[in-house]
Image 1 (tube, rainbow, N blue to C red):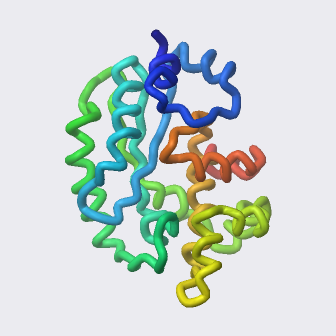
Image 2: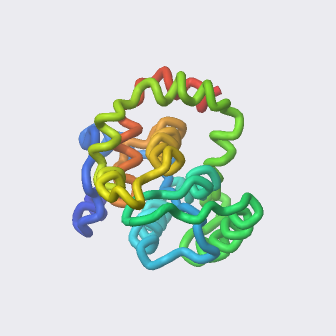
Length: 211
């Protein structure tokens, strides 16, 4: 049984942009990622399913990257929230990332010589990009109409008292930027929004990530 057959059997694949091509590419070792925003110093139970998926990939010879959201976590995901998240300092985010890595070690192997897991921080991807560059190279490819149609945004906009700040409204652009940098075509449940947004960006917008 291939890794995709196992994930399908377990009901872990929500959608795929090109299933035939992914099946072909996954016959050889892939590098894949799943993101976790370090909003606390411990992962919650909702992170278990995608983490187990990463583990299954690693056990079959693939290269997993748990991606810590040093950038996205500093903004705050509006999904499922009726009010703005409390902004975290860089010191708190760094502490949370270090704590989460210790938990990740219980499921992923960071020491193997063959295909070690690599913890990355998406803040390293966004730090070199200026605000104007981000607006010009990334924001240009997004329709506000499409963005406000997302449930996480629409629900907040319908609440006149709470509303949504431009900061949290921009969260999905940062998620999509992750996607373009990693060029992953597998859609796992936890990354569905990032992938549907990232898939709208043309390859040219990913040139910075390749350099």
